[in-house]
Length: 73
Image: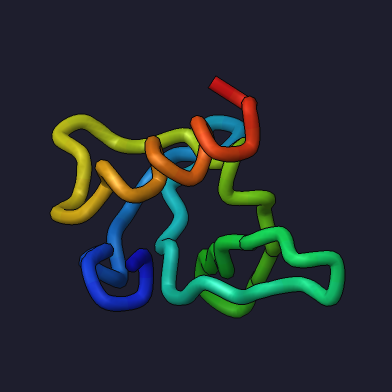
């Protein structure tokens, strides 16, 4: 549902820096990570830990559903 409904890329803020969430990835353990980029720098962040911008991107409701499913509300 995330791949089909979450509008990518979108900008958000991590540690005071604006980054672009360019893609999502599934880890071997079954967790979803966000591929965050700023220029040549790249960082993967667990989707449940990713701060969302305001206003939220289209389809962000599915991030909330994923967090609920994990129990990381």
